[in-house]
Length: 303
Image 1 (cartoon, rainbow, N blue to C red):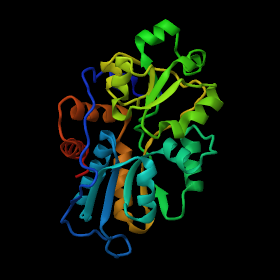
Image 2 (cartoon, helix red, strand yellow; image 1 turned 135 degrees about the vertical axis):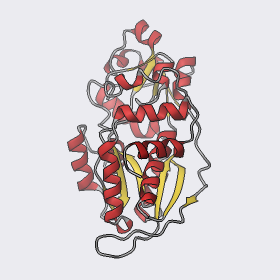
Image 3 (tube, rainbow, N blue to C red; image 1 turned 30 degrees about the vertical axis):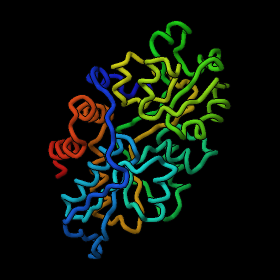
Image 4 (spheres, rainbow, N blue to C red; image 1 turned 30 degrees about the horizontal axis):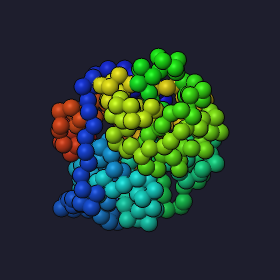
């Protein structure tokens, strides 16, 4: 997971994090509904996202591509964590959600030991409820990491997550508010890690690591602050984290053939290097996610 975006990250030396929009806001398209192969008009498609900028970007890519195909789309960006958003897709309140395959499987099947892309996708197909379906995954990945400063890595000779075991009891770890519930037992069973304290640092995790508020943190590997802040993602040498390919999750009843084919076409063109470069525009250049999404779709002949 740590080497996937290494080349692409070198293009993002000056990135910083960006904020999301109001989680209660919605944006609707006035385009007419599309028809599937059977001739039945599609109901309104609701595209949602998690509460971090990359997910908002991906949802905007999905929404604009669907609108270009004549689908009536409502957007609900920046809703919240998977604990909140997943149930909305399952109930049909959301039709489409950009997901991350490994984290989704870990959420719906806490006993899963799948770590490779193929095993994770097989697990999802077996465990998802009948209302839901995953479409084709993109090559793009945004993996979890446990990350430290270069100074900390050098001082304690840390190269892998396994190396943390010798110092973790003296370290405070940061991450999303739900990070402890999701990963505490996983880290203990795979690596024997026990941390002194868990802090909910959310989108500020990279800054908290740099400032010393926490000594180690969960930073996504497409976060350009890894390079900006001279941080070191530790190698996940025992695969505590699974593959995290960007994968559309859909509520099947509202996802007709137009929806499916449009989202699959996006996945076929989206890779990790591209995802990092798109996030650079948002974080450094302060471009709005919909504008970044529109440009990428146009460049790839998807609108």
